[in-house]
Image (tube, rainbow, N blue to C red; front, side, top):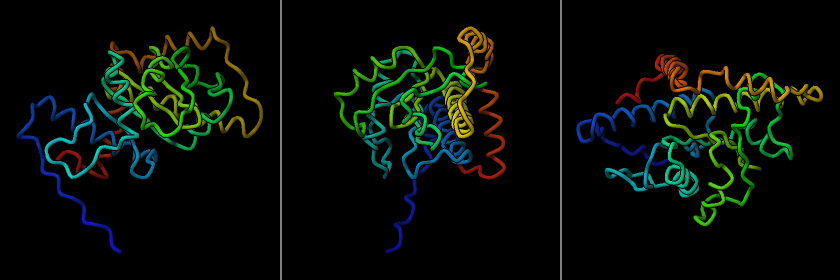
Length: 229
């Protein structure tokens, strides 16, 4: 059997508020940035801005319940969670499967001091009764390791959320590389706290990841500008 033709989704630019259109474009760009970075997981990337899980504007695509439950929980339960991202990268899942989780031992993990929460694995996230436990596990921490599962971040803007996820992803990659050679050399809590204070990429007063995200979009535009339609 041959795959079905790609459904045609008409542009909504003339039918939505300009602010919503810009949010849609930013979200479309982010999905392509994920692909460019190799963060794809078949069709199961989860990147959202605030939503209610309804299929909008006659889209032929269904809502993925495994993506919706966790994302809707954060959007509805954390005031600052305008954007939520979740990945199943090899490095992220591998660290999520370690008993001790993320090691405070490298340049990137040191920028996430006291920013990382953990949530125990309860199976595929399609059951709404897990929602209060997710919120309890996360508290106010914007970087989340879903044990045995993967990485998740949330933030006030899409670029801020992306910057946190990128930092967490790099911390996991370097940890795995280090552990393949031996035991990591720990970073003290005091130095890590200083690094986190000095790391400006998450700070709204310093763009909160906007410059990093825009740089990646410019790089992506050299390959694909279809998201702008």
